[in-house]
Length: 382
Ligand SMILES: [Zn+2]
Image 1 (tube, helix red, strand yellow):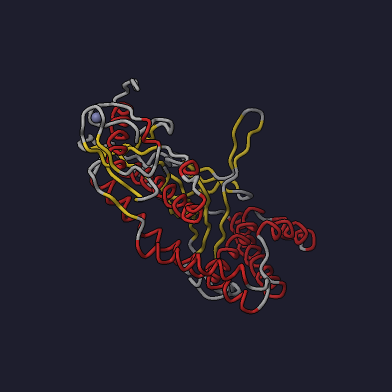
Image 2 (cartoon, rainbow, N blue to C red; image 1 turned 90 degrees about the vertical axis):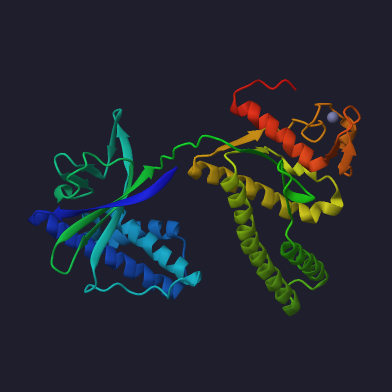
């Protein structure tokens, strides 16, 4: 798992390198402004296409070939970020870059292998205090006296000059996140299902949320309405827009709802076990086909949320085999009752030991036991 960290060094370029850095500032700005203008006139394009176009541009403006081509592509990506932020209403429309603002350019890491040896275009040596940058070669740096090397993978480097004529390089590094595993004191089995979204072996049930159900109903109604309307008509488009809005609401609401459930489960337990469900098999009933797509999404999102939270909190997550008949086995005595394949049976008395089992809680208990076996590396006897 990676986290990002930036290392900022003072940079000491020689005269020749300084000239090239300034050229790169200028060329990056030129490319940024050129494609901003281009997209203002022709509409927003894909970065991929602009990068192809950049090759043409380099033929028309030969001086672009003198500088780091990675930096020029980064300008295009920065511009794309600018447009994305604008469309997501996080910022205003991208503006032209001025020669008088802060001067900087970014270049990204490229690795290559030549004759069995690996090369990268950005390298930092903290012992000799040098950085290698594309086109510029080795430049003296200062900073991080107490470190011998940079741990992790270099992602990119940003070269800048401040108002007092000092040069800096900020190196972005992706580091492995090391989390110490907890000593487990609590385990929970989780049955992810249709009727209730989550049933834990503690007997806690998280239903499909009422607000979500309300949205679902409204969505269903609108989709029926849409199917009756004339394709492309004014009303058709209106309905379509309403549907899109509800989809967005559901997505947002679901994200928060599932996140809360995952947090609660992972905060309270150290070992968490779920089934590795192929959700599709759970819905053979056509009437439920509509709810299916929503539940599918919920179940798989929830599973990956739990997995991720366990990872960053040093807890254990296990997925048990899909073919394990978790709902047919009595968690009390181990008796297998194949009549229980019928999903409509919600609770039953075990024919062997007589214990009254709630279908889902019983299943989550069996999932818990299977998880315990996995955790302690025991072989399943079932
Ligand atoms: Zn039993």
